[in-house]
Structure formats: structure tokens, C-alpha cells
Image 1 (tube, helix red, strand yellow):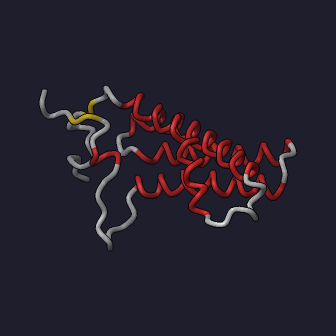
Image 2 (cartoon, rainbow, N blue to C red):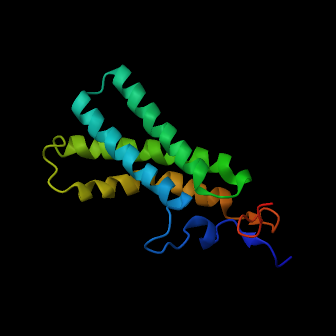
Length: 152
């Protein structure tokens, strides 16, 4: 059947946005995945790593990662896979970003916040790889394609 599209097609993973378009679900999910581990790592650096603080911050970051993974793909049957991969990406990004902040000597020593994107990307890589691995052999038939379905 040629009318099936792969689940990793660019129109599902990263839709093109023009300057005045509303925010797409992919942009919102990636923003959540970026902000939560950064805020979590800086919070752990400032508040300390006692068990109660660790539990709240890790739960917040992993939960937001799962929500980001859940909303990223528009096809409903892929959302559980996205939530699992998002939780893994959020947890890995939090861990590596926190370790980087501590290695640098605290958040006061970081001169440019953009340098935190490096450990964030490396830490999130296992979750992003898992997301791709879970979706690489999946197809989206026309009846599940959100661009084909017309609201009644």
C-alpha cells in the first residue's frame, strides 16, 4: 500500500511554521522538554539534593518530559511510546545538566546559559533515540492521519 506514511515523517516530527502561525504541538513539546530539565538542574543546584527536594524536582521534570512526549506525535496510538521516551529524555537531561552545573561549581559560575544546552542534548539523547527506535517501523494509514481527517 502506497497511501501509508511512515510515523517518522517530517510532517509529524517537525512541522514547518511561518512567523505568524500559532504554536504547533511539536514546538510546545520541545519547549517543555528544554525548559523543565534546565529549571530542575538549577533548582537542585540552589536548593540542595536532600531526598525530598530530589523527589519533587525529579518528579516534576520526568512528569513534564512524559507530557511533552505524549503531546509530540499527533497520532493517538503513538502517545504512550512518546510519554515513555519523553520521561527517559527528561530524566537523562536533568541528571547530566545537574552534574554539569555542579562540575562547573554552581550556577553562579556559568557565564552563558547557552552552554547548558550541550549537557541537556547529550542527556536527552537516549530518550530521543528511544522515541525514534519505537517509531521507525510504524506506518500511519490514511484514516489515522490528522491532516487527512476532516472534522465533522
